[in-house]
Length: 135
Image (cartoon, rainbow, N blue to C red; front, top):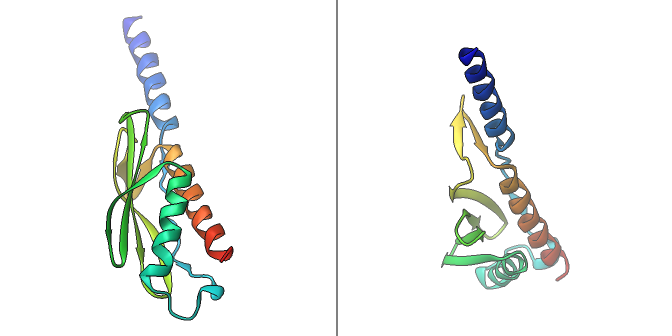
C-alpha cells in the first residue's frame, strides 16, 4: 500500500511539473516596417524597443549597438527572465538569455520553459511591431 501511495504521489508531482513547462517558442526574425526606411539605424529602433519594454514592465539592463538586453521581474525576484533584442539595419529578433524559477531545461534537444515566458515575449514582440507600424 505504501508503494502504491508513493507511486501515485510521484505521478501527481510529475504531472504538476509538466504542466508548468512547455516548449519555448522562438520568435522569428522580424523585418522593420517599410515606413521606417530601407536601412534602419539604432537611433530609430532603440526608442521603440524601450517603449515596448516599459509598457510591460521590462527593464533595459544593457544596451549596445545591435543588441539590447531586457529583463522582466515578476514577483520581486521570484520569476525573472532575461532576453536580448538583437537587430541590424533590416530586422530584429528576441532571443532567450537566462531565467530564474521559470523551469528552463532542454529535453531531447527542445528547450522547455514555464508557459508565461512565451506569453511575456509574445506581448513584447507584438508591442514592438505595433509601435514600428505606428511611425
